[in-house]
Image 1 (cartoon, rainbow, N blue to C red):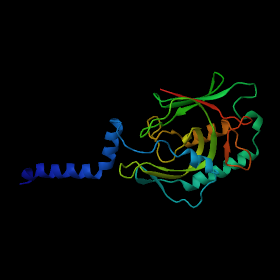
Image 2: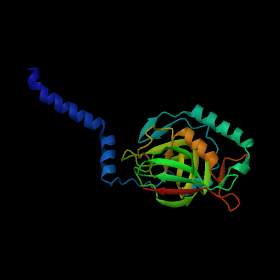
Image 3: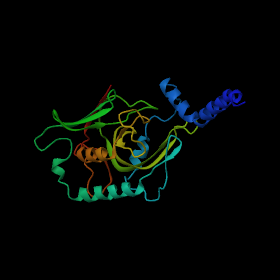
Image 4: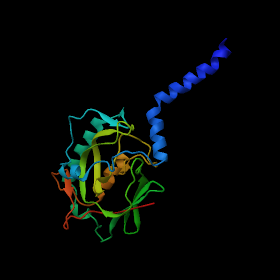
Length: 241
């Protein structure tokens, strides 16, 4: 009797699995076929970056990524934020910015094929780590300069229908290089080395903080956001396949 029911049970199991994983399967199909239809073209808009003061939002309690609630390490993010502020009070700004003390240019190379970021001082490699570039929307290629930085940033976008909705409070160490596209830390996944974003460049948290403090423009003490100026320029960023 059982062997007669087995095909039916297998069909039910397959249907149940498909239903339970429908959004995940759909996300992967539309991504591979490049027909996602997701209207989000960057992690947030340039307007949102402009109006942000970079302050930490202590009222945020939940983070959502791909329509699912994810681990939101509020306490550790808050501690890191406060430590960064304290560090900025004691930093020698003469060794920061877009050049080193001996005049070598600081610049950032992002390779979308290898999903790797390399930071240089002249021809010397000073940092190198895996990143996650655009999956639901492409990361723009070209040569840019960081035009704005925020220590903390709310990012909301994606599509609930397509299963790509995200609502991520207190995204750390944001360096906007083109419109609303930024290099920033990511606490909602650990899949670095593979595309995971809506066009931004996701970085491991420790690396994101290190390069944020290294690159220009310099965030003045007492502030958590800054825009690049001729006197406080942004670091060059080269993004390519």
